[in-house]
Length: 96
Image (cartoon, rainbow, N blue to C red):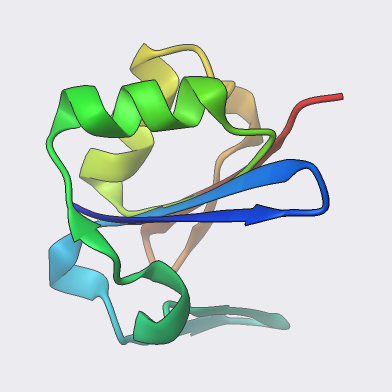
């Protein structure tokens, strides 16, 4: 998985994406999932690193089966909130 962290305006944003879909676009109806390398491609991260980063994030964007599984396992994403665009799972998380 690729993971990139952003610290801005008191927020920690984490972007996580499976390696096999980075740089691709997926479209379904009016929905577009564009997995730009400039946003998602950061460090090569293992499951534990991803889970730790997601737990400390205030905002997260997560795409791909492996990445979504990590987010669900650590309790950061409710499985009911996952959307699928061309069978690619995607979720966003915001801590209030």
